[in-house]
Length: 423
Image 1 (cartoon, one colour):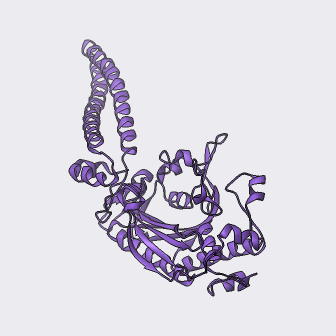
Image 2 (cartoon, rainbow, N blue to C red):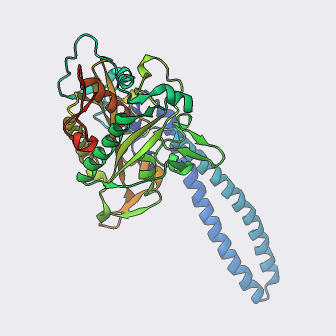
Image 3 (cartoon, rainbow, N blue to C red):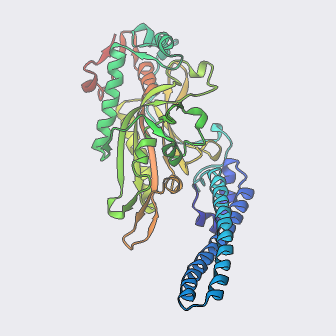
């Protein structure tokens, strides 16, 4: 959520900035400011009444001790009436606070000034491209045909066991998956990220803290009997390690990485563009998460982007980086860079990583703060990125490295796979 003080101080900036998302913030901001003023007024009155109640209690006791019964009884009547007023005011304050909280949860994050305006992915800005798209002849095979040809992935068997979007990896396909996971984790830990193993289910508070709930509630698998959610990404449990925590500035930055399966319902996803590994309900991903001071968050974002570039360069995959426009930006993100690799057989770009900074938006929801060297308490900035999501990386490897003799394995992965070719 956006910080209340920021909303109070930057109404015009918010309305203009959120307009990049196509979000009309004027009415929301006015209501939030009005409710906040009402809440503060109610709190002031309540504090005064509670102070008066304490004073009355002392005066009543003193009057009885002095034998001033009439005065004591009069004060008791005042105290009784004040208790009723206080109870009503407490209920009104709780109601106002709840309304204010609910309204704040509906306002997305303010885009960074560098975010271009736009309404869809067509308005995203390409800022970098690397690698050479291979010439594979007239009819390169898409990854789902390569997977069948070399007995790497069985989509039909996964459909039999669970349903569409739950593939079975076999033989060298499974080993390639495991190799990628270990390779990504090693690259991340070598870059200073601490490896963490986390639960694959989270409670509602965790989903709310990072912004998946209530925004993406329909996309998450819900275990109703226990009121738990299968994680859509390791970002959720990794970031929530520090929910309701006050850190010391010397503890920052915090750099974490973790491998998890990820679960997404992807409701309404149909058609050729989601065939094979393009979009799944269960997939593997290695995530990186950072907790930073506000002064370093943009620099940290740049470091994360460069880190992902290093991995893709070693994998020898053609890729590009997009700066997402306001209309394509996630609800919680202030600035996102998408990495896409080129699918030679499908002749289109496939997203394989999003690297984002949320500024203090998640921290406000998480109540995650740090104490500065001067003793001031303020929100941290949180960041996360995929390093990397496996399905489309695997699809890109199969398609871009296919030859008439088989599928070559990039040199960086050979120590992890134990083989240099699939044939």
